[in-house]
Image (cartoon, rainbow, N blue to C red; front, side, top):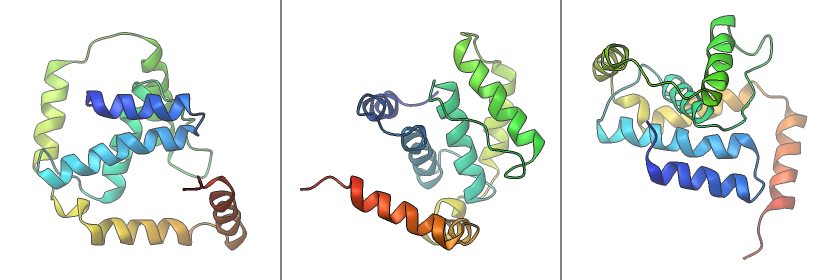
Length: 147
């Protein structure tokens, strides 16, 4: 279950008209904090990010599943289930959540380090084209709030 503060931040982002990925960023941020403070671990930064995105979808952030060729069919299926889960109000299975928590506790904490996240960000950027990165930078400059 996401923390109340994270939900409030995400809702504020939604009210300000920010993109679903920005709203989901709050949940990813929370997940990285959980790994860093030792609440649980993650096998890789990518796994911590995936957990955060899953929580965001379940909390009602309209984040579409990854496109074909972007992720495995299992990942897409999970994303679709998470989205449909946000529309239903069904409780979670105690046994399953306990099992997941125990498994995550056995994973390393280093995946939340600055170094690991930096490496993940660099490799993610490398997969994008130069024009796509340039376009994102231009949009960031255009939409940056003046102080």
